[in-house]
Image (cartoon, rainbow, N blue to C red; front, top):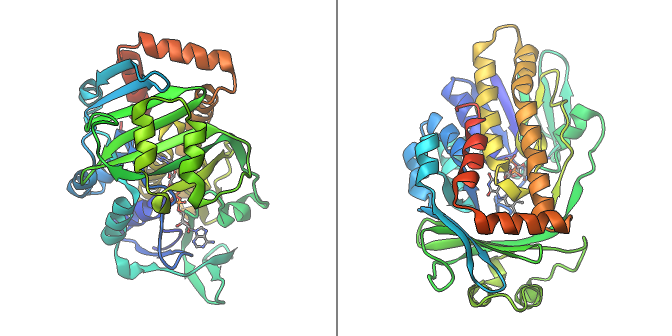
Amino acid sequence: MKVIIIGAGMGGLSAGIALRRFGHEVEVFEQAVEIRPVGAAISLWSNGVKCLNYLGLEKQLAALGGDMASMAYVDGLNGHTMTQFSLAPLVDAVGQRPYPVSRADLQAMLMREFGLDRIRLGMRMVEVRDDGAQVTAVFADGTTAQGDLLIGADGAHSLVRSYILGQPVERRYAGYVNWNGLVAIDEAIAPATQWTTFVGEGKRVSVMPVADGRFYFFFDAPLPKGLPNERATYKENLREYFRGWAAPVQRLIDQIDEQTTNRIEIHDIDPFNTWTRGRVALLGDAAHNTTPDIGQGGGSAMEDAIVLATALQTHTQGIEDALQRYVKRRVERAGELVLRARKRSDITHGIDPQAMQAWYDELRAEDGSRIIRGLASTIEGGPLG
Ligand SMILES: Cc1cc2nc3c(=O)[nH]c(=O)nc-3n(C[C@H](O)[C@H](O)[C@H](O)COP(=O)(O)OP(=O)(O)OC[C@H]3O[C@@H](n4cnc5c(N)ncnc54)[C@H](O)[C@@H]3O)c2cc1C
């Protein structure tokens, strides 16, 4: 079977690797000439890690993963620890460590494993045609590619999604802005092997370890949409938004490099169930665009990849039928994760101030077991258990 994938993000590449493992001829078309992921790193929770392990990438991924042994919430204003606990019980419960990983490292590894010679960069898809036997992708340069099926892994602004739904979809602003990047690990900010999150005033500052002695950091703050995005003022803006916060937060702001920091207005999309039309299907953010509040967007894309490749491999009633079975197995979980992340986002960012205060109070009473139960249940809800 010849498969065309639009988009060389973590979803498209994971699907490409899975489909090649099953012997299909796969080509990935990517609009960017050079891929620069939006965001410095991600926390890949164990459900996502299991998907890549399943594809035989266990060692490659482990080499990129940071050593995240514990987790803590800290009151951002006075620097007092609200809760701090080991993540070992989580790993025992689900049978796999989570990995914070640099996006550039993950992207490079997935591209290499898929096959650099099968990724066509600088190819912006502008139209999809499906005649019932073959799908054709038309590119901005006027060239075309044909396959037995086409996978739209073209991200949050997906054009393939517009083709499937017959219209573009409006994204919803979640009400906050995120800045993220990498800095050298500094124990004056937080312990080296801990995922530490400072919270207060509906804002967050977080650091977690990735490979090579670096912290992935992010800041987020509830703000109106459309404020000026000027790199040269990132530090000044963060100093203002986090004025009066504890010394480790000020130290982190001092250490960030504005040139490599990303600033993103966070959006999501209401869950929808139509992910396939004929021989065309969606995967990853194109199908379920979530806020990052439970860190499951990338893991969900990898889950899609495994279920899609398996559905095509195990069913013999035609491509359209297999694609529908893939969607049936994925929509409920993916949609539920989007809504759960939205709810968490609203609590964290003080959309309902009482709910936010109740969460801060819960954190002060937390011994880790409730958070670990929640994480384990999300992880084990994935296709690989
Ligand atoms: C601030 C932030 C933090 C996050 N943190 C986490 C986290 O901790 N854990 C986690 O699991 N997830 C996290 N996520 C979510 C995660 O980044 C996404 O879910 C994931 O990147 C989706 O992968 P994808 O392959 O579906 O889409 P993308 O990575 O967006 O890739 C889509 C690709 O398609 C290409 N493309 C688009 N249109 C076309 C076209 N017309 N023709 C050709 N190519 C095209 C794009 O250039 C892009 O390369 C976070 C997201 C954000 C914004």
